[in-house]
Image (cartoon, rainbow, N blue to C red; front, side, top):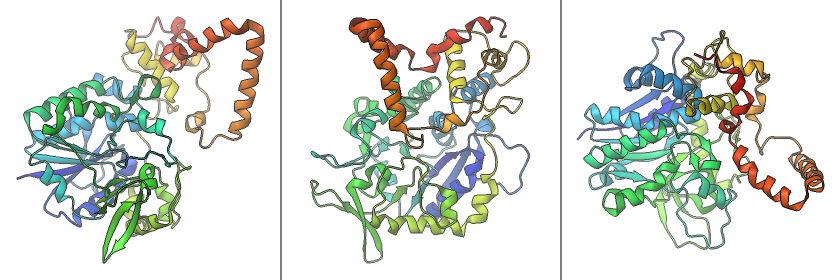
Length: 424
């Protein structure tokens, strides 16, 4: 029986994907592992192994569809949008079972149990958390779990069957236009769509792993504790309101860590920084850190390369707001043949006329790194207080309700509509 596994990266993370692949081969030397690159190289590089596949060359997207998706989606959104297409490609090559891992995952023991479950089930998933926590103590708020989805799609396993092919076709169709990280409409890249699986598949076709050692990640650290049992790394419930359960650590999802700092011997996070780093995690983080240090040349060989779809043709950075405005134009059927172009009559010209080409650093600003967030919230509250005095209670309530209709960049096309009549 032919099995395989794969990940998806931009070209700067090819090295990280190869470190994942090496950890996989520690336990499965006879199973093919592919690294799909959702990007393009500026020049040919002989050092790229044959397991590295450039998605554009093998996935059946038209040139227009590829250009549309790479412009409207940011890097993370696009990498996840092609996931079902990569599954389909591998199954069409003749593989009977395929496992997807995010590139920031590391394998600590055999994944045979996953392949074995696919003998009887068509799709296997892992939930974000598995414990029933009456008094939830996670640093990641429960509402974030609700918005991001029940299952974490850093992992997904699929076997080739009639129903799984139907699911992959459905999923791929949804991700053509609905793979944004947009909480206002209930989208979280490719992930939220998997909440439909229990209804579509039921217990007969879907297997949900409640294994504590599968897809351990920062958002479930609060409920899972690492410990050694002999020479094995084990996981048990950290939370006191959960029953006793011990599982071997199979794979840990190092989401949000700063891998460049890990190479320097420093364990830190670039995002979701407010999550606690429990002492027992060092059992796993030290192993991953050593893997990155030991494979430093591999990691560094691609890390400096820029994402191909990060800029307009003139090198100007494309911001998230630009991408979503363009998506709004497409939704309203405005013609725009090449969104990356910068000549006369282009989307770029329209946003230039509105003064939207500025420093793009604000794209990296979030509630976790913005300075004096509380002070800014207080200042905005004062402005709303002034508005309340000016328009009165009834109009203020209606105004607050109306804000929902302006929370998405696509709803701000009025800013540039008069400049885009000539776009062809």
